[in-house]
Length: 129
Image (cartoon, helix red, strand yellow):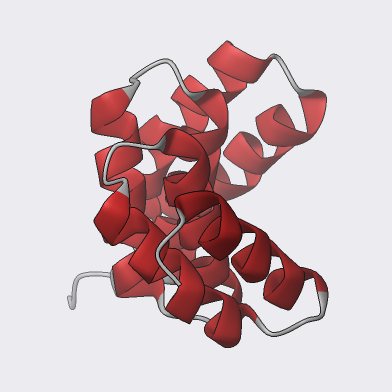
């Protein structure tokens, strides 16, 4: 199966059925045939994210952001991926950009939650007397 549209459709079908890992197999092949197709890459990033293949999701999302720096959804998903990888300080700028680009109040709320994690990180013990 080498037609990108067929591979994309099959990947979406597997994702909709709750099998993001299965979806990724088709979407990886689609991305090999169309490495700059933002629709294919977005679906692939979602499949990786949903299957907890967060390193792969991050790599695809960075490609998406490079292709279109104004893609608020890609930045949101990159921020969520970095947060799930326990890197909230790196996630925060991406989430802030996503909030500015999408103007979505739910994204703004997510920025506040992650910002609170960054600013209230581990507390240093008090100095000994």
